[in-house]
Length: 368
Image 1: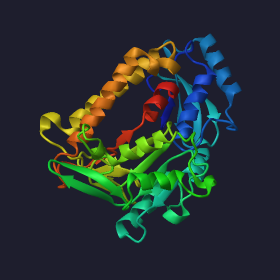
Image 2: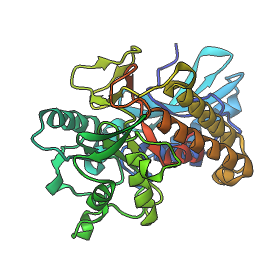
Image 3: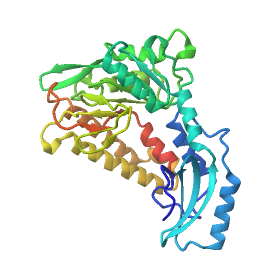
Image 4: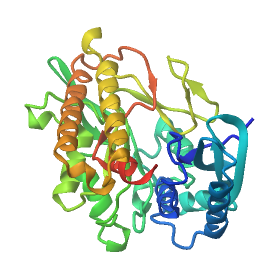
């Protein structure tokens, strides 16, 4: 049996052959994988480009694989490149790309993530930040010690979210007793400029608290989701590359003992489970989320087939799909906020409300 790659970061769809392969596309995939761990680019990373090119040259000339495809991924703690054969699952040729890649990622995560406790002294939040610190490989800090200078990875702001219950809907109004304006001031308003996130920050700010992505309907601007208000404020101040993530309902944080959600999905330590607010089954949050996922997957697939992936998102067809995704996300926020403050439905591991197109762009531009 072929060696298991976990995770596969390059060529996951088995669509990269010798003609489509180039070392630049591999390094770009590595860069985007590293970006999730807080590092931008691959400068200084000891990529064994000569060995990679030698393997590709040999196998393309020898033609040992009848229908070859190329993948890159992690084996144990190393990053490797393999050539495989769709006609023969026993064939495999492998070479090292980065020795000790997992350790490199871990060092990056520890140096560049930030987990901040906005509700120090609260037993639930104190436990949650410990687990989220493990998840992102960094020691959690209190608000007074928050330092976002040089951060390129994940920023997690952990606190209780406050719901504002109105007729027919529930809206997240505060996180750790802070308004959207105060959250923005926390990450970009420190008197010490060296502790602010940079204008080029293109990572994810997670508002780790209940109801931070609940809001709507869209016609009422004041009822926008808390996370969307934070994103819009940051965008208006020139922070256009980042994404803001919230929780579309009551949420919990997985502890050291792994826990499954209602659907049997294991929620890793430090990740979130959410009870999404739902209306009738025809317009349930999960149905709308499925539409969003299908459109996103289709957009990414189309981009990878495009002769000009970098400019694909600017094409009329792509813009139309992005507009539809944005509209569905607004519908989702509306649905999730209608039923009031009661916990209804089933808890879903990993369910989030994301504002900002960074995640789509990273897939379109980076991961083959």
